[in-house]
Image 1 (spheres, one colour):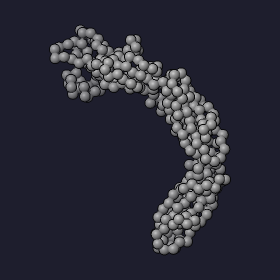
Image 2 (tube, helix red, strand yellow; image 1 turned 45 degrees about the horizontal axis):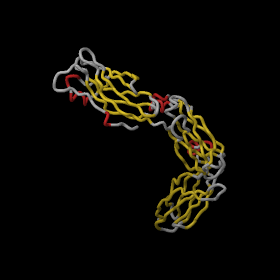
Image 3 (cartoon, one colour; image 1 turned 45 degrees about the vertical axis):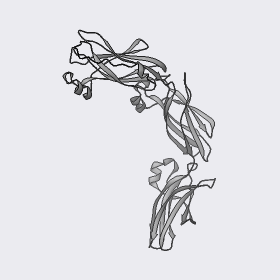
Image 4 (cartoon, helix red, strand yellow; image 1 turned 90 degrees about the horizontal axis):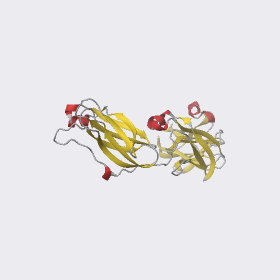
Length: 328
């Protein structure tokens, strides 16, 4: 959002006594389909909170009671107390608008404008790509997307795999966390789709599809398909090195191999087929048989142990980690 500061002004009390309300607009921000305004209002005729009215392009669009605590205002005007703040979010179409806030008078005096500003609200859709997860024969994507031009209505997200359009998904799932962040847009902007895909390494990109003015927006890109896992243990066991951990290739439920290098030399090839119920609890679709655990003879002294997962089918290596160990 762009604000033209040259058009802003604050109505502040002069040294002489005035019955008119006064205050300030402290903060203006684009909230994606809405404009958020914060500030404060005091009416000298009463210690009670006063109303602030919001005008957009000359039309009254909202009213709010300035009753929020503002200790900074109370320090400056202690006679009136702290409860004179306002914080209001006003739904608004994208584009350029003139926004004004007026303090509404109570008793003697007149209403007073606190300030006006040019505000430009972006028309672009927005959101987030929360998860891209490879599975055997498929890829799962989750996230959310919304378009200020659609308000509470859902939009589509388009998924590209390796640069080619793969599918369109409606972002209409319930996401209360999005409503909490953007209450004017409502909760129905989530997506969760499992898309058919071949095995191997892929780049998955997801775009929020624009409706109305604006342009499609990329929510994110992720690479998937590489084996993953962890090296849990590398330790000395009296003339040998214990190496254990787990690994999964997302392209298959079958176990894969791991290669162990000691001091830069290929030393052992292991099948990661041992039962790991803890891994299965986290990745139930792959089952438990993805652990490795072996004892490798080694000479005395310090060694560097590196472990690589060998990708199913392609035979490429994915680095799982390294550790130092001293063999006594």
